[in-house]
Picture 1 (spheres, one colour):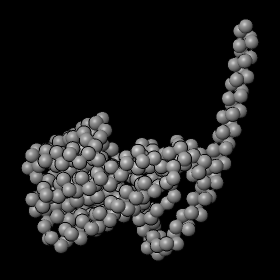
Picture 2 (cartoon, one colour; picture 1 turned 180 degrees about the vertical axis):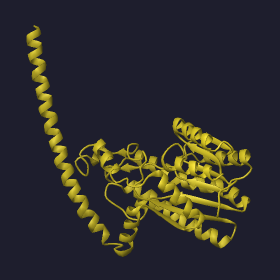
Picture 3 (cartoon, rainbow, N blue to C red; picture 1 turned 135 degrees about the vertical axis):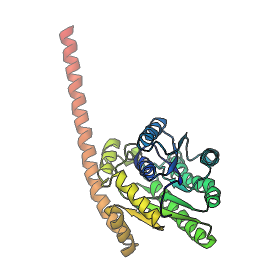
Length: 312
């Protein structure tokens, strides 16, 4: 697909981050939009921005959970009914989870698999017949740098992003064989400046193991966000124009890809060494925080007792 003018794109996770940036840049290129997100407020803001930027672009929105199969298929049908066709699908919605495997709840695992993996599957299967009917279609599925290499405490996230990678690479091969006018690209972002860290789930079993507290874990995760969502969207759209099989976003993603290629097994030992150092620091921080909390609690109790005595 060489251009986006007068095309129709469906984007999940359009209420913020890369989804919003994709919507804005596609609208600027004359592409009509079907936008979806679970966050109604964020979705409405994206719609407002897009309409102000490109008044001639047709925009429809749908609040939905990508993990709900029926909702995704209904949205695909609604998109075609409203726009006449659909040419591009960006299965972009995603969440993050930090937890050890032995401490991970099945509720948390179901949550991340339903969104990160099944959301991509539902979006692909719901829109694929419509993309074929258009004669000029492209599916863009968002994996991650963690779809290239693994690390401790991220097994649920790793599992879903590796799954998206395998699913999309197989899909691309099938589409190449079919020669049906549809192609597919797998996107591997590194750290992108979005709200995914603050919206992530950090299990209590991570405290003292790799992080000092839930909030500290989120803040540390966010420090690795080195690429803006706008830059990420530009890279993705360039990849679509070039019909790239894989798009790496950010120097961190390129470094991880290189490491996994050069040291496909040995990289894990390097990750463990680094993680142990971080875990030791987290343990020290957690113990220090506990001591400070105990001291502050004792001081508060003493002050309360003194105040009570003075009042009496």
